Image (cartoon, rainbow, N blue to C red; front, side, top):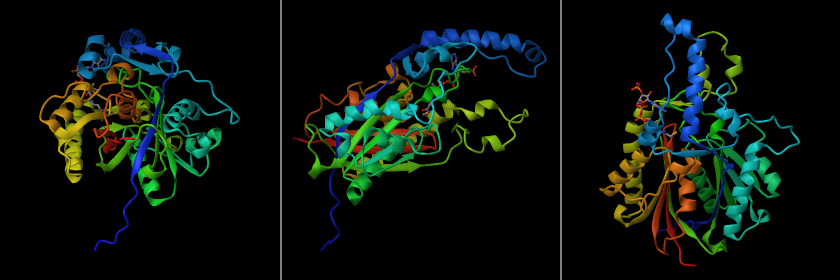
Length: 384
Ligand SMILES: CC(C)(COP(=O)(O)OP(=O)(O)OC[C@H]1O[C@@H](n2cnc3c(N)ncnc32)[C@H](O)[C@@H]1OP(=O)(O)O)[C@@H](O)C(=O)NCCC(=O)NCCS
């Protein structure tokens, strides 16, 4: 007789989304970068002439849509990003007495998610902030958010780059199954414009800013009108240098005044082609294996809410899992409006594109990115 305790069932009871009001179109980005490139090449004309540095290349709007599917993005601050002499957001420094920017952007997303869940901040007893970039080492953004919300229990931050949402959802599921929390909020405040490299055409178009939140509870406790049972979570990592950001607390101890270090190492960089080639099959195999372990046929999956980095990549992954190119109904796209919002992307897709599904429908939330890392959460809509 199997005497192992049965793990309690966990459900997603609400999701929330917040994004800055400012949109930046591809055309706006291309115009500012073209001007920045012209200024930079003029300033370095002699070195370029001597062959000491390469001239910077001008961007092309058509390339961006064709290569990525991205048309627009939201940014936390627009003027600085589009200023050819600056090319990064201009954010006033806040004092210790003011709410931090990541906690601030988290609040509306969390309230939105709690509202759906039929909960208030007083019900929350655990907060996990998972995102690619945290504004400081400590105190944790999640603990600041816990304080701002007036929530109980515990909170911590974690970073698994673009996979941070699914990794933090698994942590939430484990906490609920293990009994260390009753109502967990997972939050993904992504200010990618702070880590993006707007000076180089290979990177300037990739990212956008947004924050998502997910409420998870044990099924027996849930009061929400809409509930998604978590059938399983699966995480995997495999080391790669192909997506890197070397910003960290040791930077000031390293000699970065010489010409041995490129300042661009301290913000995002990637070898996009290699990432595409290596991560796509990794993700497809991951999803297939996860579904097989749950005895689910990929054809039975009503919707894939995939990480939003590249449209062609998502089509390739879904095609490999399904054996055919999925339509937008099966693998919805939010990339055109949001660009790559790192960990928030797959949750935005889930948040925006699930209302039409029926009780019993199955779906996969899947994120992937730097590390490499891949995480999948298989869910089923419950009849309430
Ligand atoms: C980033 C990405 C869209 C680039 O598309 P790509 O088809 O791989 O293009 P490449 O990087 O090979 O660049 C091809 C050429 O276009 C150029 N190019 C890049 N950006 C450009 C732009 N904005 N405008 C014009 N040309 C551009 C490149 O410099 C290169 O020129 P070259 O051939 O003269 O060297 C794509 O590789 C991608 O999305 N990869 C996956 C990224 C990912 O999933 N990351 C994980 C999550 S963070």
